[in-house]
Image 1 (cartoon, one colour):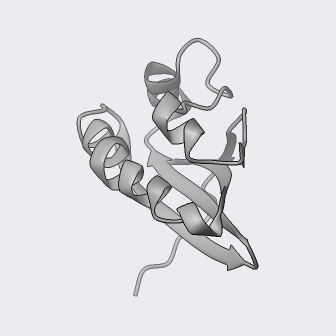
Image 2: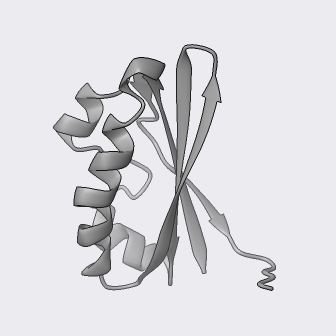
Amino acid sequence: MVVREWRGRAQRIRKAAYPAHFHQHVVPALRHQPGCLGAELLVREDGDVVGFVVLTRWESMMAIGAFAGSDPRIAVVAPDAARSLISFDCYARHYEVAGHFAA
């Protein structure tokens, strides 16, 4: 399994915009993406800025490539999502899962 990590930041006054996009657009798209095993949206408030971390789980790098394109490192960020953020990663990071625990 591979975890894909992407981060973005928004002004606190716009903190609801990216989570709304995630639930309305990202999750439905990922549900139909072969090889996608799930996703989490993490949120951290820090003063006037809100940080978001999106973690998606995939069967393989090949599955990520089918989603992200010829260079799977390049982040997939919709224009409306980008407009809601003050900054975001242009590249995603990928991690092989070496261990897992679920209670």
